[in-house]
Structures are given as structure tokens and as C-alpha cells.
Length: 335
Image (cartoon, rainbow, N blue to C red; front, top):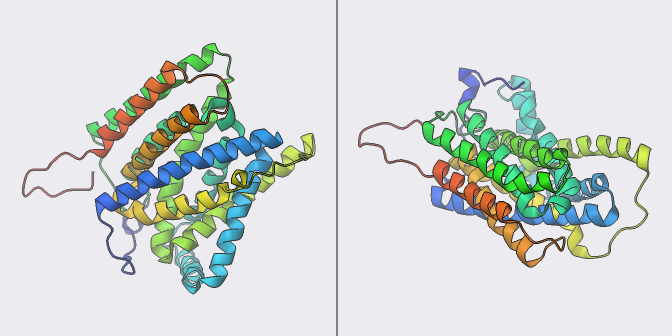
């Protein structure tokens, strides 16, 4: 169970090493990161389908990202200094131990991609992630888990979260009739919830380390540990894949992950967890539908309920992300 930070730790550390990012640029960047997230879902899902082992596909994706980040850490002194700052913050308890475990949720997300995305389709997978990510982002902001501090749980945010949940219900309604196992839709929902927490804690680590590279490296380290344990247990029962595809694009999942995880850690302090997640969702949904329309993983057409659920999820993004104008002279609380 995650407890809300105390009054002393709820306030994000002062980060004077970077200029403030304008909101429009932060939101636009988050939308772009969302398209990369959807592309990663397609890549990892297809790789898992081709080799017949989603666990191995997840390890390949996270492992390649970790190799890239390790090389970058060797070449970038600021990243190594960031590790020392995180160590000192953990020793002084200005950073809790669970703040550095965001990668465990990232590992679950990549595993969900590899096991379910090719079966559900990127659009349906993404809509399920939307619901978990929306609810999680709202809770992370409410309890001040991210670096942007606390945000009020307003009626606007609650309505947006309810719309997102309704979107998932609509999108997956046709899948129940088709006999798709319930866990296939439950897994991306849980993974989406974990993504909100991951973005929050990675943002706090980035502020302490003063380096997005450090936060992303720690994310991949702990995610890789979780995936390796799951892979070893799985391989003990079913064995290892016998052959691997040769198309290079099936192995770029790790690179895409490095970009959107590090980028999220940079902009989350400006946007807050909920707006970050929903801005990424906008990019994910558009890219996911485009992929399923123009490069589908199966011959089955996209159902009307999936399209309707995606459209409704976009409505949820707009409802929560739009900020009401405050009367002049009324101070804001970041909600």
C-alpha cells in the first residue's frame, strides 16, 4: 500500500537545473510520447506473437533498453552524478525506497503488451490502459505522489475518470461475446493503473537526480529484475523459443521505451500525473486506431464498439485536461 508523503516530503525538491517547460510544450510532447507508447505496444505484441513467448519478448524489449541506457550512463557524467544524488536522498530519507521501484510497473506494462496486444489489437489494448491510467493519475495527483505536489479531487476529474471507465466498458463489450478471456482485458487495465504510479515516482526521482537519464536507468533496472524472475519461472515450465524473426523493427521496443519514459519524467512536473497520462492517451489512441486500421494484426475488422469506446475515451481526455478559468485574484492549488 502506498501512503501519502508527509508534509515535508510532499513538496517536490527544488530543481533549478532546468528552465520551466511551458504547459503547451509539455502537453504536446506528452502526446508525441503517447504515439511512441502505442508503437511499442504493436512492436512488443507482434514480437511476442512471432516467437510464441510474450515473456521472452518483454525481456528483449526491456533488456535492449537497459543496454542502451547503461552505455549512455557511462558516457554521460550527469547521469552518474544523478545516481549519487539518489543514493544520498535515500540515505537521508528525503526520497522513499519505493520511489525508485517505478520500473516494476513498467515491467508489468511491457509484459502486458507482449502477452495481449497482438490478440486484442492495439486500439482495444490502449483503451483498456486508458481507464487504469486515468484513475491512477487522479489518485497520484490527489495524494501528491508525483513531483508536482497535491491536486484537488474535483468533480471535473471524477467525471472524466467515469467517462474513461465507461469507454472501456463500451470498447470491450463485443469482446466478451467473442469469447476473449477476461484476463486479457484485465491485464492492460491493471498495467495502465501501474503506469500512472510509475510516471509519478519517476518524476520525483528525476527531480532529485537532476537527470532524466538517471530516473530512466533506475526504471529499467528494476523493471528488468521483475521480468527476468517472471521469465525464468515461465521458461522452467514451457522452455525457450526455438526461433526468432529477423525483421529489425521488431526489436526497437526498448528504444521507444527509453524515449517515452525519460520524456515523461521530464514533463510530469509541469503537467501533473493526470494531465500527463491523458495527453499521452490522446497520442496513443490516435496512433493505435491508425495502426489497427492500416496495419492490422488480424483479418478481423475493428468493431463499432471499439471505435466508439476510443472516441469516448478521447472525450474523457478533454474533460479532465481542460482547466476551468478561475476568477481574478483567486489562488490556484494546481487542480
